[in-house]
Length: 373
Image (cartoon, rainbow, N blue to C red; front, side, top):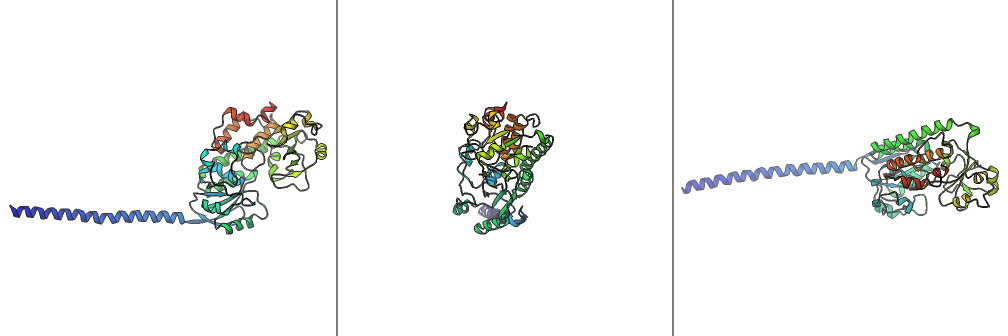
């Protein structure tokens, strides 16, 4: 009996040892597989590719880009429309008007200033740890050197993407490939391309002698303007409107060029259009300084809609795509036949990820399109 018990006990020990042995052999396999996957993930994260940016520069960037820093307001706005979750911070902190149309979770992203100005905070940028820095906008003569300088200062891959009004669609497609946001980028590109094609077709149908002349007033006195042919005045030309400010050298900046009231009286445009915060209220009320202009006498004084950004020129970014429809409809409602409430709501949902109400759309248009109606 004892022998049987001993034999049974010994057998159980062997079986148990075998099971333990199996587990011991299996564990390293699982650990090895996990380690292999971890290493593959690390290698993927470290993997790079070389792209050619719009300045013709060869830039080595991560294959997977999870975080992006915008160099300025134009880039900030474009990147927000593509995927705000990839932004690590702001080049310009959103104001209350901008925040109204933005999810609260983005309000308090760190602000590191504009790379081209004296507000740039290198420490804040480095703390944000972006995978890349992206600059978007007008291709200035020094753009390649500027991008190289930023990359040397920060040690972070820096990319320039050209985005003039008629190349907005191309910019989105390039960014979609770079940031692996192809699906949404395609939608934004298609909307932008169709808007521009329609605008050019509509504008071409307007006889030269029937074209509206316009002055765009900027600044506290309304006597700064964006000259014809400048980056900031592109939507005026696209909408088939004659910009009266034909200047020897149109400034390529938001503040534009200063002009005199005497010159403005000589131009005597059909329409006056003021930037938000300028002198719209005074001029619309027939201020004595402006009352002799035919636009004032005929009630053709309007204000550019703003929210989250100015629809026309500041910053000169994707806001202008909607601006083309709005300005064309304002000047030529029988040619640019848009329901601007509908168009505004559609644009805000697609580009700004914001579901605009009818009342909010009406408020945005209250001193422009709806005023004319």
